[in-house]
Amino acid sequence: MQPRTRLAALALAAALGTAACGGGSGAEPVDPGAMDLSPEAAAGESVYVLRCTACHGADLTGASGPALGPGSSAAGRSLDTLRAVIAGGATGMPAWEGELSAAEIDGLVTFLAEVQGR
Ligand code: HEC
Image (cartoon, protein in one colour):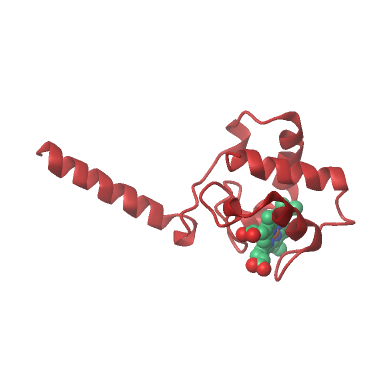
């Protein structure tokens, strides 16, 4: 194969790979357990694994709920907005205020921020 052809094949494979994940949202899968997280984010991860993976996926690419990882729409929203949705809920998304402590919700927001690379 000529180098140019090989490059084009690689680009096509990359495009197909992106389209195949997270329902085409462009969200990239992550492995939070293998990431170097701050203590607060690691505490948030424990809550995430228990309460959130069923709808948002262990790799954060989403399931019945939207993707939350890098490249997702959620990654483009302010942390205050994410916190408000987690605390107050949305259509199909439970409200966690009362169920979780303020510190646990803060930990979840820090976890999402670090996983999203901000
Ligand atoms: C029963 C399923 C379900 C569970 C459990 C759940 N979510 Fe959700 N979540 C949703 C759905 C559905 C939406 C989309 C709501 C909408 O579009 O209005 C959502 C939206 C969100 C958003 C906003 C995403 C965006 O793009 O703005 C965040 C942040 C979020 N969830 C975090 C969490 C966290 C953290 C937990 C665990 C504490 C959790 N969710 C548990 C279903 C769920």
